[in-house]
Image: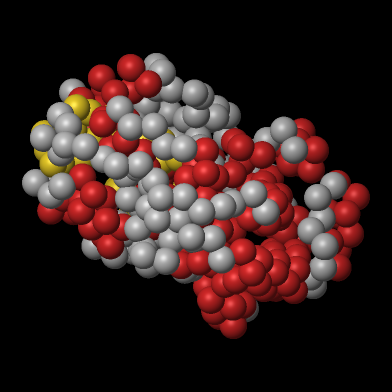
Length: 386
């Protein structure tokens, strides 16, 4: 799994087995919430910039959520041009994150070497996508940075990434309907296809299915009040109306014909989650190229010194990311993050419910790692049998 920096922490997952089934799952989330303390006292702009240096995973999403939270606190509206540029950055990061997991983590589950070469190509094209939009590096600036669009360079980046996706992840065109999916799996040209084929051969395509429902639209007033009163318990183990929920590619793509067909046949198991991630990967890459055609230059808006609080919510690669800030005369007085991993790896969430009662097989830790990879946390994980 992805190795995180100290700010990102890790998750320990302990399994107990009885009568051939996984009897219980103990999830210990060691995210370092104290990592946000250095932000306090900084100006809003400097604080958001510092935030992007604390996180190596979903850095763009973190910075944009922070900017959005500050903007709401300041009552500052960002123009459509800046919104479109930010969306493009977020799409580029989503493509990179999804494709990297397919190239690095999924081969390991097959006992194959990771495709480091493909990830290098993707990172070269997408990791610093912002450079050809915001040459001053101020893409995370509340109010919007100095947007100077290099359309030719951006088109080249998108083309390079698309070519790599077709070769390394899909082995051709993306299989976005049930018939094409069946042929793609049978062909086994890429690790992603071979992983699905192995899941089917081992009877694990539907493994980890649970009845955890999608995270609904959250009332902003209620959410703000819960975070304002939170002593850390809600951010660590979030619930909504007393229930745990799931967020991420599966919940966003559940109505896509391919994903819906797999859900109907097997439930929300590993194959459905892999299909949802690949569907989102291809559609996001296409949408990103469409957005590039409409971008133009813009200087953003000026942020004034204010006192207030605000929420920033973005759909990051792994799910819904929520930031909350409190400003005191333009400086950060409080900073909170509610990450998608806290929903999906909640003690009563999708991972736990997908594992408890499931057949343990000869190697329950491996089965758990399959589901962990399908849910894709934003931190390192360790799985052990108690």
